Image (cartoon, rainbow over all chains, first blue to last red):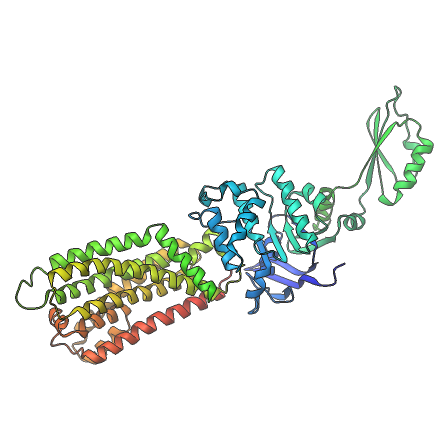
Length: 309
Length: 274
């Protein structure tokens, strides 16, 4: 565990007019950690990022980034260590990609000469001289990532960074994120692409209507949710499965798929016990698949659990 | 400050890139040349100096045109970037909000100033040929200089307008109303008041004082009351605008009309939620 928290949000509440955007939210991110924010549209992900960036001020609670209040007077210098990719990124359409990056690099007091390398890194080297107004959504997104990476930031906030990217670019995007984490950069990103996040992030926070309803690594979330794991048994034998339901240990449910396949649902803690039992008592099966609950399952579980019925 | 210089030069380059300043310079040049040739014709070879007559005409032109151009340029500066979404990204960079406002002010003032100098400069070259021996050249130079300043005043006012509403359309409407009030309605209201009042309350000194409350009138006063021949050409010889006092009062007015709106724009933008 990193000893120093680079981003710290404590008991933060933010209200827009009458709508509670965030309520009593507490979370923190350390150096070299990545945090994925999940939640429905309007759950408060973007609001949280804007609070961390100091674009808006919390109504209650406190926000610290690298030890400084981002909306306070000392924040201007801190922003040199900060990269942000907004959800709907907009650029000055009359500038070319290279000119855009040069402008932002100057503002961050970074050498303009590095921009060409950054453009290459996100695969825009060939389009550097083209006007940004003529860029496609994916190209704008990549330019947005390039500007966020100017000057090796220590904190990176990425609001739905992979929308508009093709699968290949998504892959290279997550490679970049992993390299940054290894360099000790804190990455906060939000996304709806759950399968991607499952493979690539370390810490996950799920928001619902401004409340933090679950947080932790994928493994911790699985423990918290305690969703059943599924074991699917396949039989290649002509006879298929006989009725095994009556002889199963208590607490295990079964669902026949067809005569040659059967699915068992069981608590995760009983996995090994069940495997031993199957090997000893069910001679019909030739093959089995174990399915852990996916992030999508966990996400729906937490979202539904916190819905007042 | 470096951030201000970067933002100002971007604003200036944007104006050149989209040919805004070129258009402004061209429009000013065409009007100025027209007034130079047409406006100075009636004076003939007798009476007042050609240059003085042209200076009076150009003053009236500048009072109408420059506030309009400045407001058209600056009303969009803040609200436009907020609406298009580039502002929230800009503010995550090491740039304070006041620097954004001041940077835009400087960039746009320089651009509009360059356009003004170009437009009036070309007209000045022709005047050099039409009235080479005039003794009122300093009056013309003062006109050009104060026109640049008038542009600055209305760029600052435009930035206040740009910080207020949530939509560009509202800012545009507000800019037009402000132009109408300062350039057209203020004078009309003052004249109306003068006629209705029959000099009971509004004496000459009160009248002059009221004129100073409007930057456009202060600009007019500065240019028309300053030089003897120009006062003659403007028909102000008998007026109570004593040269020295009117000049310093007008300069004070222009100074406050630059700094106060700029400060107000910074204040408004600082409190704005994005």
